[in-house]
Length: 101
Image (tube, rainbow, N blue to C red):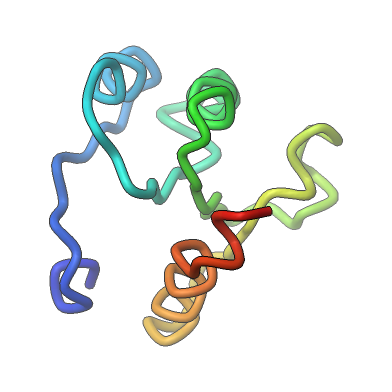
């Protein structure tokens, strides 16, 4: 889906340690981040991304109120989501006004 939108996908990780390693030292424009990576919450990845100013979207089957409170304000898509919802979320995330915020 992301490739169809013109994104360059640098990889996918399904474990927390893999995700943390993947984002280290690599220039990244944006990240689609599943909240649950094989039973581990991806909040440490979100923390690194936020500290680097890298925009990201959480995707999850959990309702927003089940996220840890500190992470509820981040962009979020509830699974299953429509491809247009992902497209719109990415456009919002990468818009110049979003980057300035």
